[in-house]
Image 1: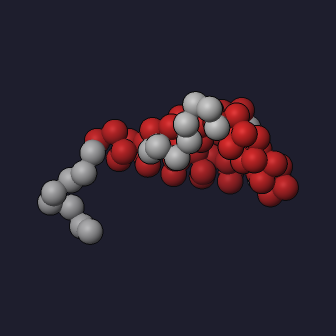
Image 2 (image 1 turned 120 degrees about the vertical axis):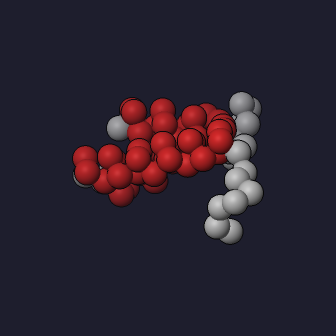
Length: 68
């Protein structure tokens, strides 16, 4: 789960969802949410894959020729 939260934190900073002064509060809220969800290991793997892809796309920047 710590890998999941590390990935999520990185993603949230990359896309501008959190700022340094609010990051701990936001991450605490996400920890509570995911604790209630009681994720299985395959679900954690799925989420980390989605977040990895979003990070990749965010770092790549907008593509002019892609679908809208």
